[in-house]
Length: 323
Image 1 (spheres, helix red, strand yellow):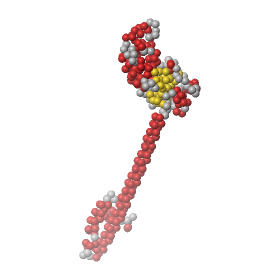
Image 2 (cartoon, rainbow, N blue to C red):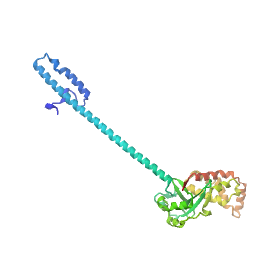
Image 3 (cartoon, rainbow, N blue to C red):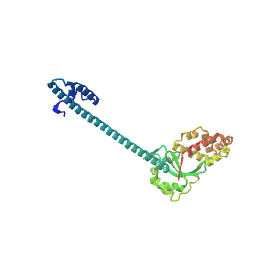
Image 4 (cartoon, rainbow, N blue to C red):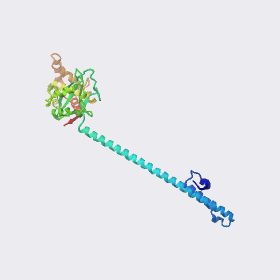
């Protein structure tokens, strides 16, 4: 509180919104008017009043300068504190973001090195498995696929309906999982915490049926892309129908499960591969087979080799090897 209850702002003729610079400028103006040195020749009574007035002006100026200086310092302190808080917040957010990104990278690395397999098919529902209303117990079989490189891989196929038209496969991150050996696949499947395959009906029975020493898949469950590619060197009449039918069906099932649109176009109704498949499926019939064999004898491999190679390549691009 200013002495004598006077208003220092009124004494100097400034407002509470005035800056320190404005207060000083006003003080200098008043000092020019009321400074005692300018009134040396005035009567004693006037000099006393001037001195008293100048003392009040000095006191008011000192008081307001201190008040505004403290206010300025308070504002600066508050600004520094706010900036410190904002910096701390940014640093904390950056640390949290870096931690999240690091955890995401570590999770991606773990999933890349040890992906959690799940049944892959559009009918699969995460967390609830398959809709088994049409077929409550899918048929699960280990299968072997020999790629064009000659590498033989092992995976599982589960037919979801009695007609065996829809099939799900082991997948992770939109990739078809293949194991280097039947034994390594059996070891992986036994580790239930490593995958999400138990969501399918009959899983426990299937796993028990595999035994501790799994056997190689039989011919019905073995597929050979390498042999298909080799056969394309010869005329279609020399191709083995059952080989092409089985591999074509597998490629269709994989393409539907992993939604490989480009491959499905190669197999679509009316395509060269569909036409060839129709011939192969009747070639052994007594009557229709005679006409099919004549048509096969007139065909050139080049009409179909591009489609077959493209379909096989489309599937192999989705392969992910494990162990």
